[in-house]
Amino acid sequence: MSHSCDACAEATLIPFADLGDIPVLCGVHWADAGAAAASPVGRMTLAYCPNCAYVRNTAFDPALMVYDTTMDTNLHHSPAFQAFSAELVKHLADRYRLSGKRVLDIGCGQGEFLRELCHTAGATGVGYDAMYAGPQGRDPSGAEFHTGYAPRGAALPDFDLFTSRHWFEHLADPYEFLADLRERAGDRRAYGYLEVPDAVYDLATAGWEVIYPHVSYFDASSLVRIVERAGWRVEDTGTLFGGMFRFIEMSVNAGDRPRLGDQPIPREDARDRQLAAVSGFAERNRAERSRWRGRIGELVERGANPVLWGAGSRGVQFLTFADADRRLSAVVDVNPRKWGRYLPVTAHRVDAPETLTELRPEAVIITNPAYRAEIAEALRELGVEAELLIA
Ligand SMILES: [Zn+2]
Image (cartoon, rainbow, N blue to C red; front, side, top):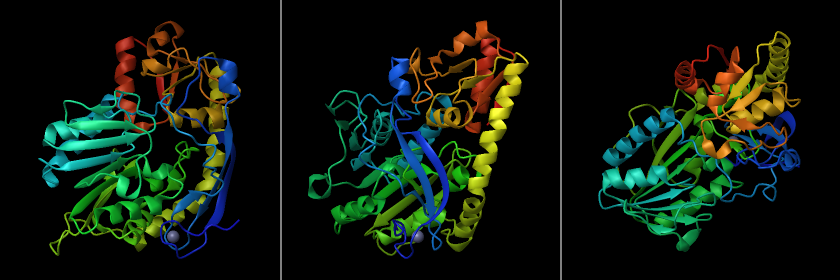
């Protein structure tokens, strides 16, 4: 079935990689190993736009992907992410002079970011997330929270800035989302901040971040295209967090003053880089899966007790591709909500990092280079001398 490009609407998407059936609920963990093993899978068929380099899973089925408060895709347990998030709060509070203004945070997670932004800037805020499991209504920071998807159209409160971090790529119709916010802004001055995984990073590497909940894969060029097509002016865009994330800031009715960003808006060059990443992806993903299966086999054979540190979505995808037969000695994670519980489909149990002091692994695999220093330090504190391998 042909699918026209969600970003530029000027071309039909071309399939380039079929990753087969993968876990749908990669942010969920189960108390029971059998239930984890029986959790749903969905097809991942990647296709790209030859015109703007947008990438999408054309086999995505919205009926399979339901979000609720049992899910935990929260990145805020990591000190590296917290520090990055605190910097972002300062940047947005200063650049948009948010004192007395209203911020909408769509896909607010557990509200940490919006709470901090309102508190730091003296702003009020409204956060929406189907996964939000905290108290409803207003809290002392000036933010109020709602469990559920953000309403559309006139049901959405007026806003001076909308923020949406790591949610846009989950939407079945990302264009409609931006066009609706643009229409809601009307003739008032409004700004927007979007943050997504950078698809150049995701598709130029092994593909551990190509996960079922991610419907769209935006690089600089396709992100600029979809934002402009929805009627916003691009103010600034760039990468964050070691190149793994991309942000884009936008405005409407901001007058004819110069853009806020000082870097040129990426267009054809960015697109060509992304098209190059896309053309090598299927082979690279296949080679990395096979290389890691082999590597884990060697480590197990020589009694090295290899473990995976990090049971987030990247970890789950790595396990699906490289350790479906559960040869690793353990999977550990710093998030206590995951301890003693089981990951989808492969049904690996997640343990506390402290369990490594007894297990004494000689190799610890991580899937996210951004956490390398943090995990190396944690291992030192635990007294575990292991080689750190980055998948
Ligand atoms: Zn396109």
